[in-house]
Image (cartoon, rainbow, N blue to C red; front, side, top):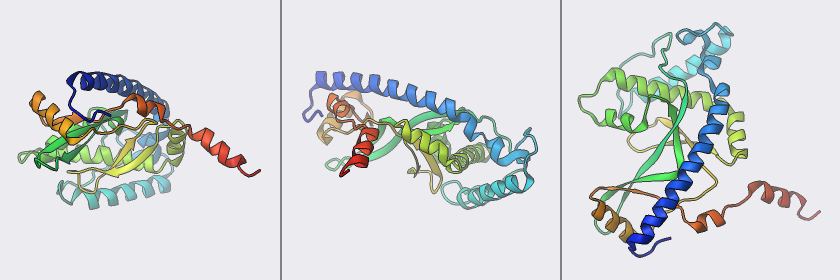
Length: 249
């Protein structure tokens, strides 16, 4: 990984990173689209969704009750502080899963400057039309629309609930080497997000490289980098598991 600020080397590394990220995201999106039928909200909430057919009353009632408990606990707390009730039937604008960039903040030790870091190999799963960056903007807006904020919280909670209640989907993605995890992100309180990883590791260069790059670009954002060595060091988990299975036989 780049340790000194070499503009040409950094440009090449960024180009490689973008190409690798695009390929991985396309693969992850394809897998997610294939599995989307297994995480349909209608399966869990039945008649509690607008336009959905009736299903097992006791089962859908149980799922809706758990979702409502999540919403009441998370939605009423900071930073959302929603007073809206969870309406019945629920109106979902979109149930098509989409991948959004996973971002986090890093404070540079020497300057104390906060840099927004983007991962090229991990993504947050959301429903289309509910962009994560827009969600963050709505939260920070003092004049925000409570109705819009409510819609964001509900859609991300519904997706989390469906995926957390579908462990088979997680096992399939794990087998495909795009593991699914549930994480909390800064600025979003206790709201759990669904995050899809990949078999490739990305990393940050020295802070001096980040500082020089952002100064030249005139912004406060940086993307983790994927180099040739990150591809070479990829492990074949199935191979390792089989070797452990026969070890000592």
